[in-house]
Image 1 (cartoon, rainbow, N blue to C red):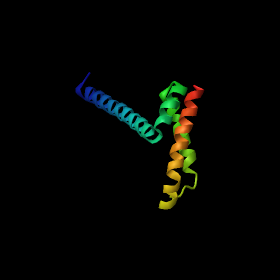
Image 2 (image 1 turned 90 degrees about the vertical axis):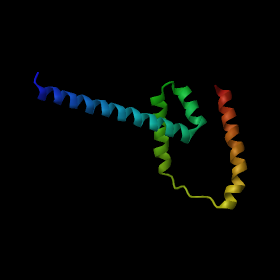
Image 3 (image 1 turned 135 degrees about the horizontal axis):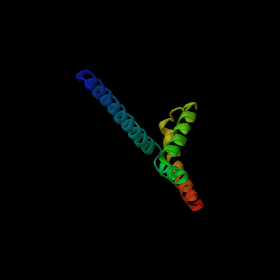
Image 4 (image 1 turned 30 degrees about the horizontal axis):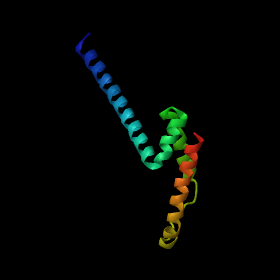
Length: 101
């Protein structure tokens, strides 16, 4: 092989390696973001699905569906009024879900 061919092969290999590294970093970033966003729900769905890719696909679909909702910011008074109730409901939902397993 001549030098030109070797250089072309080396460049192609470097480009492919960079593409693989970028893909793996993007998947890792997406997984981390979903885990931070969904918290315990991420862990529960991961256990149910048994496959991180499948669980993350379900969560990504949920995110897309929720983006279509018209969500507005609560006033400070409403936020304070609902926060304690929501905390109790969330803990109750988690404990109920754990009993089903």
